[in-house]
Amino acid sequence: MEGNFKYNDIIMNIEQTILIGSQLVLGAAAVFLAIMIWSKTKDIAWIFLFISIIVAYIEIVFFILRKMQIISGEFTELLLPSLRMAFIIAAFSVIIIRRKSER
Image 1: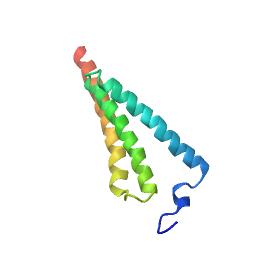
Image 2: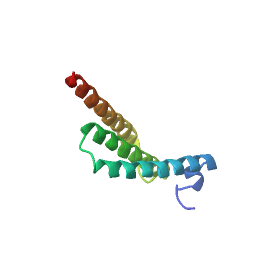
Image 3: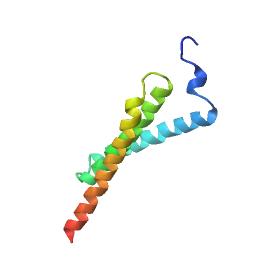
Image 4: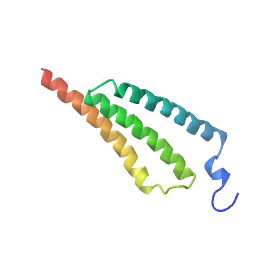
């Protein structure tokens, strides 16, 4: 291959390939189901969880793009995991606030 792009840099071994492939397939299934349920619910806590699932899948895609040296990763490496956790925290906060207000 030409340039800085080396096949061994992308796929170091078969285990890593299987791991990335399974993350892509399972992540795509989770995103598909989240979008299907999202259209049926108006609950903000569930919507925050759905968004965190979508962000987790985007995180996987950006990981692959960084491994292929298509994008640089400093910004996405820091932002996406934090963003995913922020949506999960928001979802649980909504649930806690809702439960307290019911008492």
